[in-house]
Image 1 (cartoon, rainbow, N blue to C red):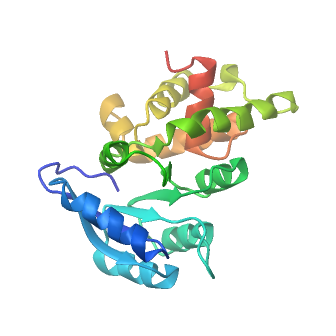
Image 2 (cartoon, rainbow, N blue to C red):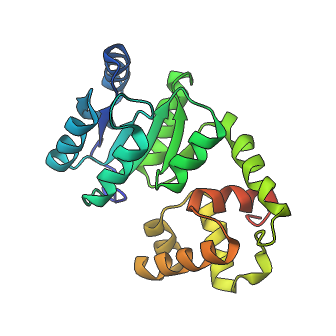
Length: 221
């Protein structure tokens, strides 16, 4: 779900088991007119219920929580039909955590030690339908993808059609399916089909992986 009415504030649900962190985020967002904390939960199960109740534009989701972890919560939210943005918000910069979250359908991955102003900027980008990832993690994710190049089915740009290459360039720019459809004057459903095909051809498992690979290969030029 990408917001189309930018005159109304983007609503955010925070799911994190640390009360002090939740309070800090709440105080930060109180200073912003275009970002509103519509709810918060210290337990994943409560967060899932609130997501169904409030249907926020975006969910900030902690990765490491007791009981149901962030990845399981992410999958549960998607299975229950939540179509908004889900951005992981965590202290973990481990490669396996980043890759697992993005492959599970997260729309971004932000570290909790980031500068508050930068966090607000990234949340605004996420609200507009763009994927967001902490800058320090971009190189890490690229290295994870680079390690696949020695495998028999390494990504090959020449396997893509012209339209798939166009969509890949827009993915690299961080655009959502809806924004890509609008820019290329095609339906969102058509974009989804092309994304599915290009991921399969490139042997990649998420749009974020495809975007990072495209940037590293210069496909976004």
